[in-house]
Image 1 (cartoon, rainbow, N blue to C red):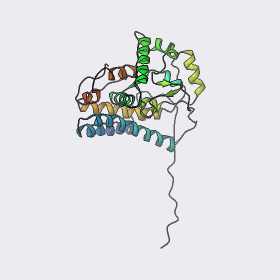
Image 2 (image 1 turned 90 degrees about the vertical axis):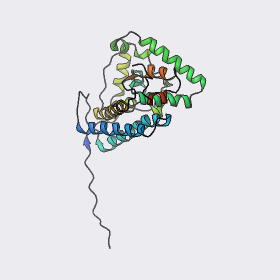
Image 3 (image 1 turned 180 degrees about the horizontal axis):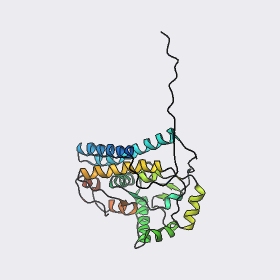
Image 4 (image 1 turned 180 degrees about the vertical axis):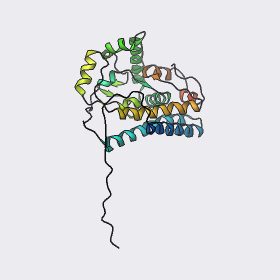
Length: 249
């Protein structure tokens, strides 16, 4: 029997747009949130161990990478993403993340940083928190060149494999605009593909919803403050799973 020579039709690529999303409620994103919530519930139901706490955050990061890679490959991007290695303009923004992400990063630092590196990180965290104390978002923006992410070193992320969801989505279509905005100390955003941000925001919402459903601390955390909280107490992973307050909101 001869094999069929009929070629499969390729799905047309979706047209991506560069805009800032405002309160979208796309059923596809809601489905992503629901799926992530179910994943969190399933993982935590499996046991209250440090490994399970890590699995909650890590599974979300892996899914985000997969979803973003799929979007990039299946979408018709009218302009290329301008980000490249060594481009760190967005690393001067103030990062927010969920408790499961903070737990994963804190554990990564424990496992991969020597004592001297951990002490250096904590020192940079305290400097960053002191620099932001009592200031509004606009005031922080004006001095953000002086407030690099504590995890930034030599234009590279020290925890890149476990960087937060928002950092995975962050990108620009105009690196020059990013540099100008940083130098000017404003919050002007360069063009970007809103769908990439919507994808990770949907995953983050599901992560939060699943945490709440299981009685675990949720909410939006400041990266620097969350890491300081992580190292202030024993067994933060298990304590979070038990429903204790690990982070200051």
